[in-house]
Image (tube, rainbow, N blue to C red; front, side, top):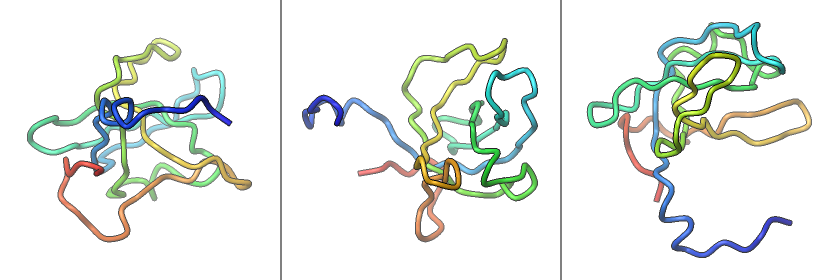
Length: 112
């Protein structure tokens, strides 16, 4: 089990809804991954992410999918690619399954 976190720790995270607008294979990554472009709405814009979700999704089926992502982590270099957001998923038996809203919502809406 992970270290206990406080509500203040959680409140530091800015988790928003974004829509995947592009998904490309990322053969340079050490583990199978896609390069994603995720639109988080007018306030934040389109951000890039590297996501290890190849077991459960093809690039084509990702386009238009709403996802949750942490938008206030610093960018991270992955095989020469700047990953600007952490797209959230669940480590399931079949692979990483993305966390998505149960109903369509506005891009940029906050997790609360």
